[in-house]
Amino acid sequence: MKRRNLSIRTRTTVSQQLPKDYQEKLVTFRAYCKNKITEKKIRPEHITNMDEVPLTFDIPVNRTVEKTGTSTVSVRTTGNEKSSFTVVLACQANGQKLPPMIIFKRKTLPKENFPAGVVIKASPKGWMDEEKMSEWLREIYVKRPGGFFHTAPSLLIYDSMRAHITDAVKKQ
Image 1 (cartoon, rainbow, N blue to C red):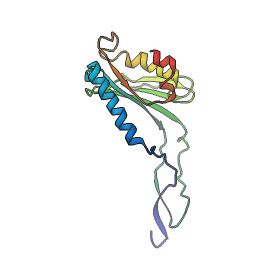
Image 2: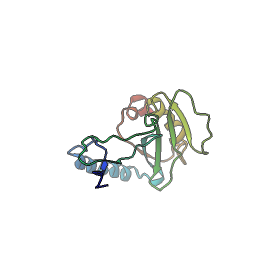
Image 3: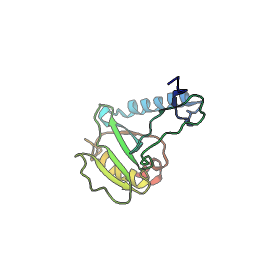
Image 4: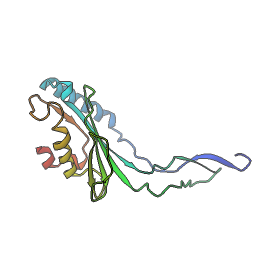
């Protein structure tokens, strides 16, 4: 590669940065959760953490061979990197995983067969919105073991994405 003036290069991108006070916020949030768990005597099977992860059908590689000294490094793809979907995952503090929900970027549900226990949804944008959050609460969170009758206090932990904190979602 040296003879051809080539080297392994990483694509050039801008990444997100954590807020400067993230550690302080983390400590405060953990203390808040710990206090609520102790105060309400919430058992591990009633503590749930939920988050979404956006994915694409084509994930371009981060490294490629390019001439040494090149400032912009392009990576070829199949063109499906814009075909996206969102996977919603949740687990409880006792290790129990709740069924995943997959939200495809389309208007109708796909006709393919999916594994049992996976909840399939369709959305024009392919990500979580207020409607999909409400569906997740009704179809997955409430149906967790012990979730339907709400006989014990519970704690659902998720980020402050707009779809999570609307008044309609909070009422559920």
